[in-house]
Length: 246
Image 1 (cartoon, helix red, strand yellow):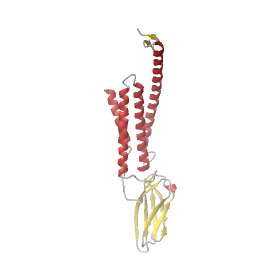
Image 2 (cartoon, helix red, strand yellow):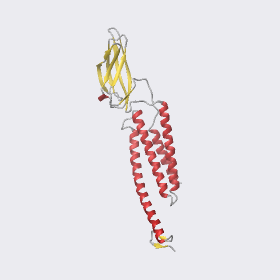
Image 3 (spheres, one colour):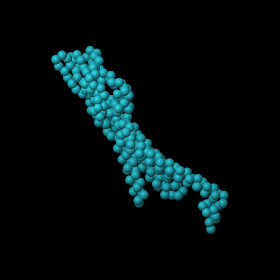
Image 4 (cartoon, one colour):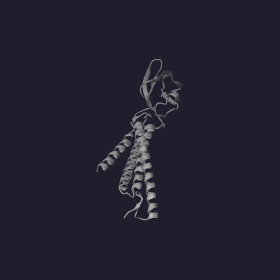
């Protein structure tokens, strides 16, 4: 009973870790979403303005990238190209502007997003991601339960161990998908909690898988030797003690 409780607890922890690596997107009005490491055109339109300037451009942590930069005019269209060297940081950036003429001016700030993939997910895409994650959790539990079912039988022990390894690998892959989704679509950096959680669990599970595979190899080799000895000496032969059983 204690083993079953441990299995359920471990499965729930993994399931929670996989699901917490995903969150629904928070949408807001912005200039758009752009790919990290590429130029970003910051734009403004004004019919009566004779000038537009960039007051400041800020990183997600509110530190200033640039300030007091003139925008290039093309009739009623103004733009400023933010160099790719300043777009390597993921997250919500902001640029503030001042546009006007000799008698009047207007100011404001506009957000823009920087992500690895250069796109933002829709609510439908987020729902699909959750569906995939839940499916993977169910598959993980299925193989895990099969593994612990077969592992209780001596002859089926290697098969049970194999199913447990498959369950662990599915869990690791699910965590990886969560990290990729968070990084590419939800603007999480490589030092975000999702990544740290993924790496910690992955390294631990990889170690467990390696130990399990080594144990499985020894078990299979011993099983093969035992079967060969039975074929050679008969069913009464005690492989471990090297003598016949009477």
